[in-house]
Image (tube, rainbow, N blue to C red; front, side):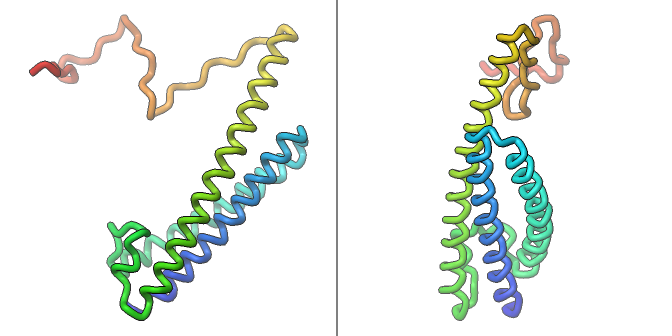
Length: 164
């Protein structure tokens, strides 16, 4: 089992490198949107798609190693607590670096998403201003409740009395 730890830590470093690449692509995406460069944006999106496919493969390898190491329910922040002594320092450093890369990626992706959304809203205003149709409302998200249709009632076995 201990022989799997170096491979697992190397895999986490590989994941960190992929996150760093995604961060760079998010920054390029943001720059392309700000410059109204659709060709550059399309190229960045293609690169993101290719990288996301490689991330799927990394995730499958990670899940396999996690099962082999018995780390199924161990958060990344607690990885070093479950490693043999000779890997504790490396595991802690790797986990911290991966977490930092993830935080940086999330920030860059959030900025790019906001820039894209603003650009789309501006385009929608232009289309509507030119007499085009307004964009339809977005479909209900599984995380958000759909608007309730007053004419539709849930089946009786799905009703709950919260006052009970």
